[in-house]
Image 1 (tube, rainbow, N blue to C red):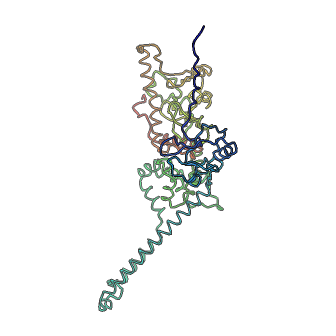
Image 2: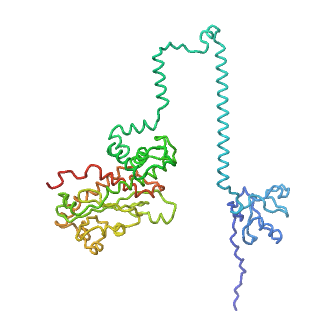
Length: 481
């Protein structure tokens, strides 16, 4: 017979949460704050659920802190633990839904900010008026202390020596000159006082070249008599070239030329297009005969070289469009960039400029998409760096690709490959020097503003043309006699 006794075990108590169940309330149970249980009466419980807005059914284990009740909701008892009235419902510090929040529109915020600024201005004006009144009172008080004899002697006038008639005429002529002085003319004349000043501010090599460019500009884009410009053609060219050379802001250019900021922007946008069309002839594809006649000594082992390629890359402001971001982001530069394919002849002359591409585009894609292969002839050499994977394209167009060899799994280069690397590097350095001269124009050195991206191709073409007009990259001693 089994005499074991069965002991009834107590049911395990559920884990109670000691925090307030009201949303957006982070109060936990502590001696300073009283917690109240949800009532068991279904009518009162429903009222509490509507007020608390938990979005779920209330249970008897939920607690509500005393921050959500008024003082009138408690019974007037002197006990340490106050008790609620039967009609008490949470009404304080209740949660606020997102659609119930009052959010002011941008227009209302601007109006309020404008009103605040107006109040500040009125306060400043009142303060200035008070200061002027105090100064006037102090002046009157000091003026009253002077003697009558001094007042009769001075009588509010200064003693000025007598002037002769010749001095008066000179003063009049000087006054007329000062009255007719124009800030813009003085500024332009100071720029054109010497070729060195003109080149350091605009990138143009001489005043004579500026005059020729102005005459060609007037022939291509004559002024409309119905729509007259505030600045003449020469000043508009100077404004455009100063923007490209020094990367000045349009507000600074407006101050220099005494015009509005909007006019400075419009003059730049119009003049860039015209200058690019005028200077396109300076960046042309030379015939093969001229290239062979002007082959430098460093290309002695690569006499079939027709062009040396490299990509010029410039950082751009982060665009707002997501599609533009994906096209412009460069994994190599870790930023948003624009790429342009530049081609130099062996003599150092820039002979090819492609349109701009996003930083995501590879060198191989830009080379094939720019239709460079169609300009080359049979068995022409194309010198590139290791980033151009264009072996198949060169074979397809019957071209010779000149590229440094890869090390791959070798420990070091063999002797012939090391000589080949040094010879290619000695020949390819000229395209790097051309890019270095392009970067001397600050607009193509710093981060390009997004509103100037549509004019990037024209700016690059203008700068490349000016680089070709400058001093040659290779000295005369680098060519065979």
